[in-house]
Image (cartoon, rainbow, N blue to C red; front, side, top):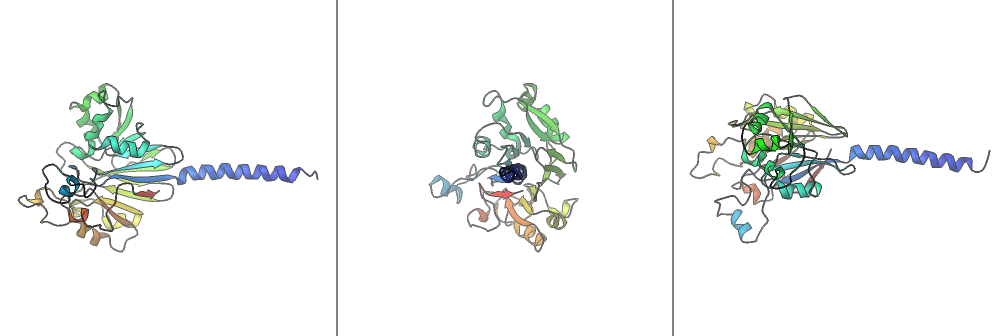
Amino acid sequence: MKSWFFPVVLLMALCVAGAFSSATTTHDEWQLMVLGIAQDGGMPHPGCSKPPCSDVYAGRRHAEKVSCIGLVNRTTGAAYMFDATPDFPAQLNALTGGRPPDGIFLTHAHIGHYTGLMYLGKEAMATKNVPVYGTERMLSFLKNNGPWSALIDDARIEPRLLTPDQAVELPGGVRVTPILVPHRDEFSDTVGFLIEGPRRSALFIPDIDKWEKWDHNLRDMADRVDVLLVDGTFSSMSELPGRDIAQVPHPLMIETRALVKGTHAQLWFIHLNHSNPALMDATKDVVHEGQRFQL
């Protein structure tokens, strides 16, 4: 047998292994990235003159961007946003370096969750056909109300219909499934998202009225997924002096902790109101901007 045969065979084997490893790595490189953690009004919050807002104004701490997560593949560069917030420019830069995302998934039509779409218009990025995923009510709201309708008419965005409980298959082995949740649905219905990667899965629900109103059982869901990124708006019923907190229902963090205790999923809170003490005390189960989760 010729002396060059074994080196050539070895080289070919290494090339094949390398190609397989590269393909596998592409799938393994999916990550969820936290782009903001605050309730719709952000932090500092308009009209707030107490800590932690006052600490931001005094330069003693950093501001918090509005609740948003990104889905990114570090190998291919594919990137998706979940909600389009008033902090869209900075969040897009953190996710893609500034290029338009490959898609935006909207949860509902409250100001912190869709108004960032304005930056796709002709006054700003003047994008072309950015896919925007929403339920029938969510897309109808955009189509029938300006200035959002101009984004569709000018082909800045491309509406893509989400059907509850039906998965959207993304290139690269990721499935995104919208799940209806009960919320104050004045302009659209509200969904959370089950995000399933090649290795792990996450449930993202930034807004819900109460877990007991949901058609699903949170504890069961927490045994099915690896990561919970869920509504952490309030810690207690006494956070809004002078206002009836029952008029802005959200599950208290202590309630959610009790519901999922002992389950498989790792619990993380997002969408914190500026009044929530967890913003000031480094609570171990509150996400922070820039935090990543492998999928």
